[in-house]
Figure 1 (cartoon, helix red, strand yellow):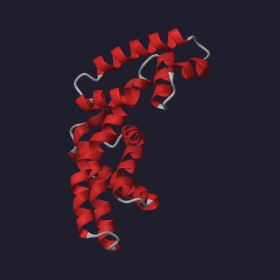
Figure 2 (tube, one colour):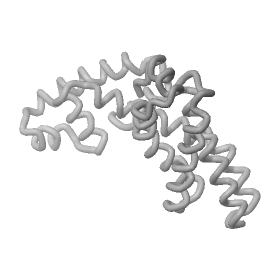
Figure 3 (spheres, helix red, strand yellow):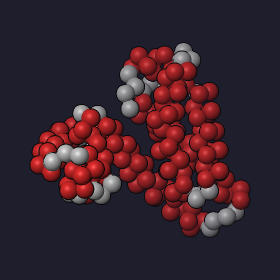
Figure 4 (cartoon, helix red, strand yellow):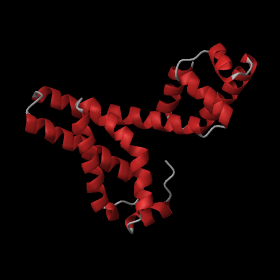
Length: 183
């Protein structure tokens, strides 16, 4: 997510374009995160919406994107746990497990977003190849699908791996995920 310091300042003054960008980039991730806690789509969608409304009302308090993300994930988790308590749909033991697993879900979801953003930043053909590879396509299938030679696929994939490893070198989880998904 490319939110600059200037964007944060604009957000604090009520710029809805920056809010919309954060909303569009994070809505899906927050919903996936929420669904791992409670598998009720309507409840999760409502909770994510409520979390963004609460965030908007407190926008002046945030100085960087990390704090915004932390607030939104925590807000979604807490609102869902409140929903569970109100409905009495789960046992206390499973609610305790949610707290332990929350960090794992956040890390995984943020890592997926980082990986996909990095792949989407690659040049057109290379990005297409890597997205197909993520879907489980083999080199031959990719070559046929894109109407290019298998050697072109191999070369572009090799170059993409090098670029992605360089770009993601400081994120251990993204590198592990990249190797698990693409090799």
